[in-house]
Amino acid sequence: MYTHMPPDYTCPFCLVVQGIEDPNNKLVQSKQQDIIYQDEYVTALIAALWWPNNKGHVIIIPNRHYENIFDLPLDIAAHIHKIAQRVSYALKDCYKVRWNLH
Ligand SMILES: [Zn+2]
Image 1 (cartoon, protein in one colour):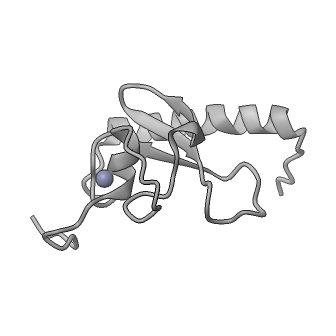
Image 2: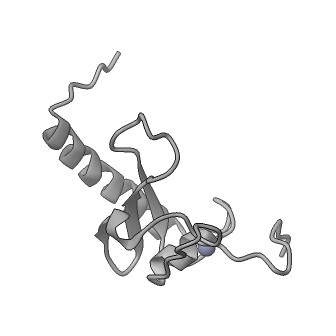
């Protein structure tokens, strides 16, 4: 299988799922308190460092490492979408936002 990962690569998202924090923000920049949802398949967390002016930016990641969308099983992809919709409803309610759908 082809991979882009260098041999010594440490996936920061997998560290988040494993509950690992780095006080120096080198290995992983997210904190466990950034996690807003987690089940046996996915973890959803607020993007704490990037896009600071985009309140509510949420990243939903599979708990298992998949390098790319081609490796991602369809049932996990569907679950990510299900949780994305659930998080979207929560954000909509929390921030009282209106969607501009065209
Ligand atoms: Zn990973």
